[in-house]
Length: 516
Ligand code: HEM
Image (cartoon, rainbow, N blue to C red; front, side):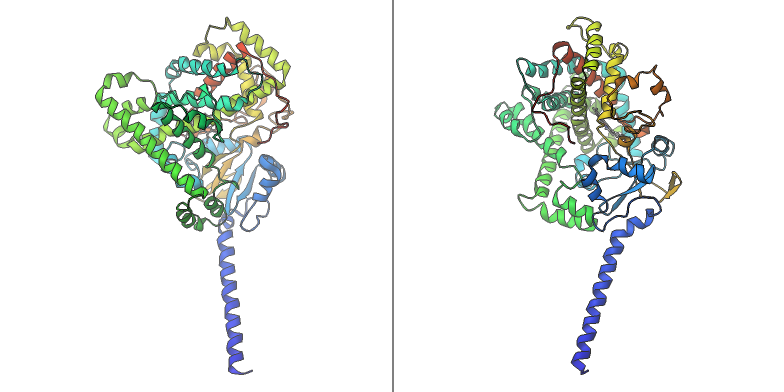
């Protein structure tokens, strides 16, 4: 062997060794988070994609399938990121309530981390700031405030339902989205978006028609809503996300550099998301600034306003710590969050209630009887009436929310090492509760695939036997939804108004079975 052959062989070895070392580093990087929670049962994750192939295979049922196989606490890998899924009512109570001090925050998905308008809302803020803001917001949502919103809600419902007059066929989910967005627009901003004058769809098709309205207010609202719709649909952290989100799920360290580059390339998803998020923030900041100016101009008139933004601005002036806490960017984020958290959720729930009632004539008959018994059509129920005079409607709404649960997962992250269901989880573990699995568990809901509102009858055996945390569509513990009563009030008022004037049937062209 001459010297050049020796050198060649050495170089080959060196390249092989370097390639192996890089390969090992990549594998170590990919499996590093797995190492910390490998003792929790779960399927073997594939490199890069983790368990995303299972999600593609089973759809949203994947967590029920895995819970049956691996037990109530198991691992699910979203790309490289392991999630510890908790699918048992008692253990959910442990995570959400009993051990709240060790698990007080939500994990922050990557699309949010890049958007201040989303990041600074109540949903994702942490620590003492969250405690103070939550207490301040809860104080606004007193029963008397909710009751005072009934006329606003009712007038939006009446206006939206005019779209049904003379119609043989309508896509109700579009109408309910317009309605819910209008209601929250008035409740949060004191602004009438007027969307239910003409339903708006997330694919923007009606936006153009709305934009044809030349009034300044209509233009501003339609632009704002268009951006909002886009921002909402792009928040998903799944296979349909932007390229940087996809890359981030596989190799998180590459996400930020990718995003920085892609957001500068017109036509890329990241480019659009970045522009929309910045525009939304600018728009919200200008709404807040305008309202602040109006307040300075006429304090007494501003204090009379009932919308969330005005109430928060008034609260800010009450003392020094509120002024420090409620800076304009947080106020923008909190107000915008209402639109984000309160429109699609309520619209989805109202649509599914209507869909399920239309599918079950015996439920419809019982419901109509209850609604008719309340009184003549012009008699609008008050807050107390909604709570006490419509027990069957209450059961129908609950059962619909169980049947098609809006949030099948609740995100949490451990603040310190904690033990859940016999497994020690280190600080920083993503622990996600699975109300979607609980809602279909025959232990708590016999024959879970049957739509039966009576299972929520407070005097019934099934309701009495059920674990108190088996049904948590609005979440659990101190982080529970702040808009629960608001949206239930809106849904009940809508159902009462709609069923006083119309009945609904499924269109022959409707997708069956529904796919989510
Ligand atoms: C049917 C309608 C709604 C559903 C199903 C729903 C569901 C949820 C769920 C599941 C959570 C997470 C709770 C947890 O992690 O334990 C949540 C949180 C939240 N929701 Fe709702 N929601 C609805 C309507 C609303 C409305 C109308 C608003 C605003 C007025 C709102 C504002 C919020 C906020 C701010 C949070 C975060 C609370 C915190 O972290 O302190 N939601 N919601």
